[in-house]
Length: 360
Image (cartoon, rainbow, N blue to C red; front, side):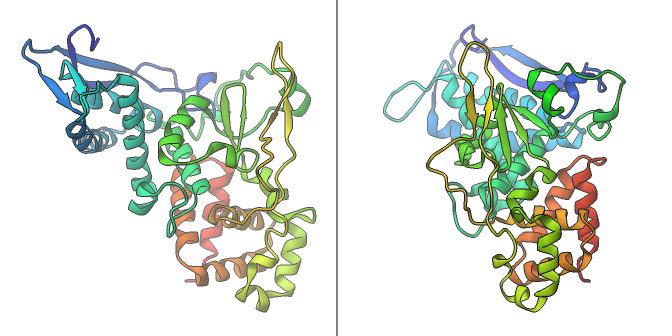
């Protein structure tokens, strides 16, 4: 359309999809159809300056995101509806060039659009520091927290049925060989390309978190439920064993909780994923990654949720007390995730119950 001489002036999401359909379960299926609004480009349209286009992009996306959110548009619908207004900046020119006179192609511009949308989302849910951070910047929440927040933000539903989607309808999704033998994998899912488009420009390395907070298979990325992370966080003895040690050694833990919590940070062993016509590939296999890893703020929040699930109140209070002494990141992330998890999810129930246990 741009090559054909049109300016894309806006994009409006129009509700056209059935909220209870199977495709919408635990995924970022659009609840709307996004319609692009176009106008003919004037004959005297000039050449755009790449630096000026990039300066205008965050303001334009921010304005449109605020407008759409005020009208109840959320998640993936919001992401794709923001692409139209962003394209207006680019499509108003015959072409866009850098200061060196090189033409900027549309795919390169769209990468910038995804980055701006991702940073705007992070600023809303975690704060300005996380929105600006990349490549392990100090003083902000770690990559896994930012990736999880973006994942859950994208899964928000415009139609408001996200919390009920898992239980709506009587049909069951078709099971393949793998899910039939191991049970249907739980946890929210996004198309790999959507996750990559958000993570890459923000400096989030997906491979680093494979098998730890995400699982990639068949072109989709699954966010691992908290319950699947118990062995990683607590080791072979599990939450019960760690809770007993926390309760016995409460005085020591208040000063240094790291030695008892997350004793090994075990990562699930790589799992062979069958691909038709090819040898099985190993999900999460990366020889450069060590099985022993430093616990992150997200790890500590998930550990607290698992202690809440096991009913170990004293151990939970000990952990929370230690985290409050550490700083504000634990509580900040827990509150952000509570706002992002679907209302009927087990994760939100555990988080809200855990937050109620905070000392007043």
